[in-house]
Length: 166
Image (cartoon, rainbow, N blue to C red; front, side, top):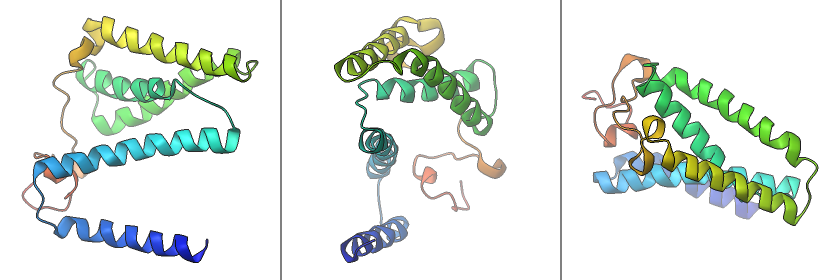
């Protein structure tokens, strides 16, 4: 790691450490949560394109599988949200394996078109399966997270998990 990267990492660590001290409203905390989620998705795509050299236009479909499986397992089956994260990982990995088996033979534009088609199929299915996904409105009544038995009751408490009045 070079000198420039060390400085950038130090600034990032300081910013994250000082973030809870800032007087923020719910809007800014929500934006930061979405920045974190989308950063994880972008990092996965960068790893895929950078190290593997493959183009994936259906990357959002795997994000949808993970998020919808967590939401459906908590609302329809009543499982705790912390447990459903592992089920979502397994379901998404299984779907990725099913897609990867025929896609491994494709190269270049054909692979890009296959991933684009997969992403579109997942998008259409998520919109049309109202009984399961809620359609364009999404899944309703997802229970709040409760790490270590403490229910997070407000939007800001997602970031400030150490608050005593959560």
